[in-house]
Image (cartoon, rainbow, N blue to C red; front, side):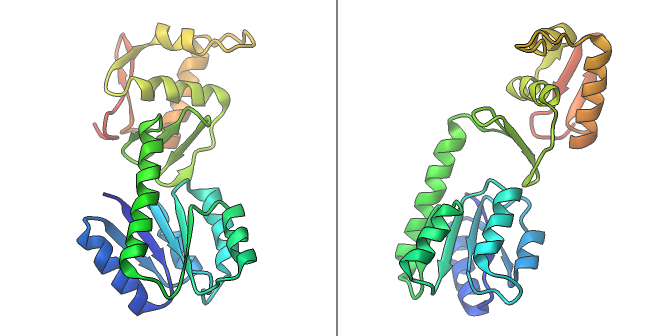
Length: 222
């Protein structure tokens, strides 16, 4: 089941969708404006987005959402012009549902997007608590926000994430971080990168196992 964010200024429509999604086992959050939607974005696994919002245009907001989150995005809107639908897909929308809509059809299409997103996750995205690492795209995110990492920090995080819950020795990490350009990472550089990565994730994620190496917590906790 997924956590779904509804950015919709029609309270009756938002409440009705939320009620039926929660009946299916999902959790929901509601936002009546673009600003509220961005504030509630962290942790969303799917975003349902209206175009006509009181403080912004939904198309402009979609661009901001795409910069901050990799969650699937579905437009639910009364705008039914072909050029607007094309614009939505160009912005990275996963589907476009026009109002008025049949509730069961809309729920089916939402479910289909979630299944596709889940298949992609099973294909390689590593999720540990609020942390996501996508090896295929070379990206990482935390609490729904992209993580700004150096190449060395990213390779370090990937090595730990692939072995989450298990100790990775310092020697194993040093061998992993010797990059394709033969830029050698020494003991001091490894320690420095671990410290920087820990500062970006939080101390509860990366644990030092004295005399051995490091371990990434399985669920983002101790």
